[in-house]
Image 1 (cartoon, rainbow, N blue to C red):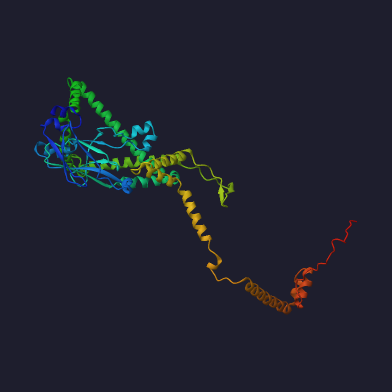
Image 2 (cartoon, helix red, strand yellow):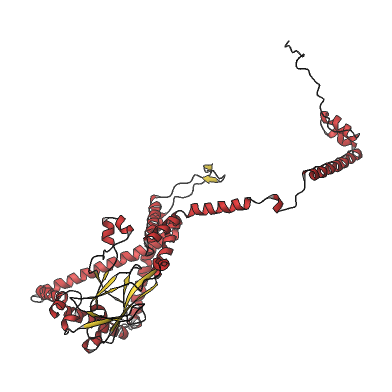
Length: 474
């Protein structure tokens, strides 16, 4: 068993200690605790059958297989963090990739990991924030967890299932909605263009610094190869030992982890900034810090200005502008179209938002529904407003005031008409000169109205015998 333990490439510290029988206590959500032996040949297989979240919560939650590793004794106790994470060998078997990964074809197979085969895929447990426990993340549909080996020297290990809300779901959903709905405003925003240029310039600066470090390392290698006898062979041998011998690799990593905090605590940022020149007592730390900060700011400003110029829109035309009237009656000016750079940026933002919405939750069905609702939100909003307007337009006149009958309306109209006509007659009688202020054909009617006669006469229609009458054209 020890031979197989050292040959299998999961862990590293297991080759340096003696092999012993291991077991883990599994506590299901319902039922009594179970003791499972752990070995390379027969790993403990634990199924997530009682720790699954309810169906309504599965898109928003994540299932975790949590392992509480007891105190570690012996030489492993001093490197407990690496002992917990590097020697705990776990593999996960889950359902096949979802519908989205299957539709993407080769791209989906490259991006989505298929762990549906027997034995699953090896995973590295992560430390739970705020505790010393380790956890393995699974999709809400659950799966199987295979425990091949526990940390050496652990007094006792306990495992159980739990599910919690996944904050990444809400973050991805919010960011996807912002990118989809705000792709056009963001692509036209000068502030967003400046931000893209600043971030890109800092990234370019980082790449340049990385290439400079690589060049310095290669130059140092060349110096070692040229000055130290057998320098190339010694370097190659040391690299092979670190890669091939797990104990040597762990020693290098653990030594670095022990050295790094002491070095940082002894010489932190304040120590470097307060560094002074021993000859002229110049504040070298502050000068270097200000020079680096000024250089970074200058590079960010240059990148922002360049990005704003690349994504800038065409200037607005001066003078008269051609326009047309849209179907809703508003005026639409004929302005120059957006540059191709803005169109491409908007398309990239929209595509990124759709990709986030297609992977925001842990359910493919929910992802498709969210994407469909997001893309059709304008139409849905239009339908909702139309329904509200229709509901408001169904109000009847009697909802606003008390109605009267047709006969009462005729009586009131006649009374008001006679009243105002009498007022007009009195006004004309008091001002007879107003009669000459109208046209000739209206003066006669107005004088008749002043005399009390009707101001309009019904035309007289003569009865005609259609059978005896004759017409001729002269």
